[in-house]
Amino acid sequence: MGTVVTASCEHCKYRQEFHLGGGLGGVSLERYLHLLPEQEREVLLAMKQEEKINRLEIGNRLVCCETCREDGLYQKTVFCITDRGGTKQVFGIRCARCGGELQSYGEAKTLEAQLPCPQCGRQFLTFQRTGLWD
Ligand SMILES: [Zn+2]
Ligand SMILES: [Zn+2]
Image (cartoon, rainbow, N blue to C red; front, top):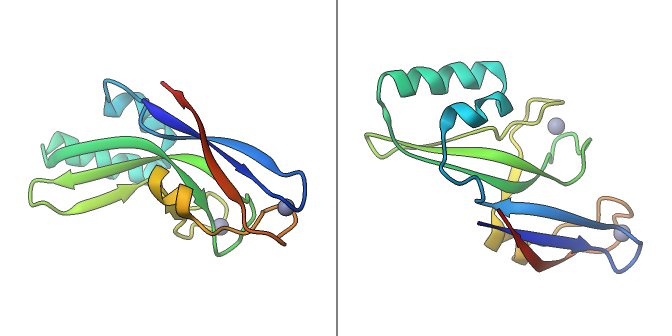
C-alpha cells in the first residue's frame, strides 16, 4: 500500500498528485526491471544470479533533477538493494535526460520537503497526504 500525496502551490494553480511508497505488492524484480535503463538492469540481474541480493525494496519516490531541472517534479520507481554484506545500493535514481543523480524523497520526506513550485518558482509547495493506492 502506498500513499497519494498532492502537491499544490498557493501562488499559481499548480496542483499535482504523486503516488509514493509501496503498493508494488508481491515484489518481483523481473516484473519491474523494464523500468530501469539497460545498464542498471544488467547489473541487477547479475547480482540476482549470483545471489548477492539480501533485501529488495521497490517503491515510488518523488524526484527532481537539480542539474537540468528539465522534467520538474515527478514520481519514479526506485529499487533499493541491500546486498549480503549489508551495503545498500539504489537503482533507478538517474535523470533520463542528463544522467545526473536525482534528488529523491520518500513519503515522509516529501511531506516535510521545501521544494519550490516547478511552475512559477515563487512559492514552496504544500504537500498533503490525500489518499492511498495499491
Ligand atoms: Zn506556483
Ligand atoms: Zn537531469
